[in-house]
Image (tube, rainbow, N blue to C red; front, side, top):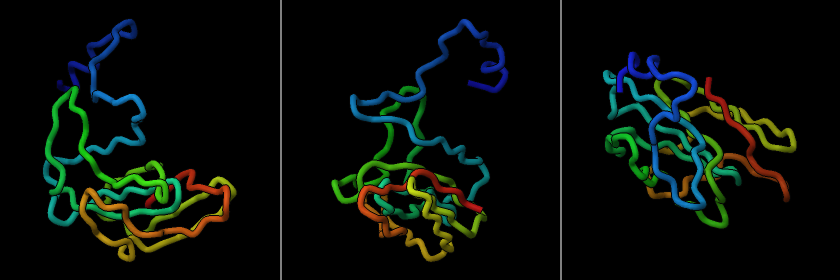
Length: 139
């Protein structure tokens, strides 16, 4: 679907199915991969509720069309819990992690390891009991 097709839809239309979700799934982010992007060096950063995160090379993800079921990108466990955010990393250098209780941690993205899609990542932020990650930002 082109940008022209999207603009042609009116408010009364229902749109198209972008992704098929299972019962307990939800969308936590959308990252547009530029066509000219170097997929051997650019990464996708993923962070879970309990402070685990990792970067995964873009080349590990296959292209999908509308209505796909997605691609596994993180090993979700009781220890990591669900993902909170994902960000495409091209030339950003710093990660800001914010917890629900107001803790803020600044981390160099070079210190976040590059791992495969089906791993759970490494601990990025230690959290107090009852706290969890609410948001991240990369700069």
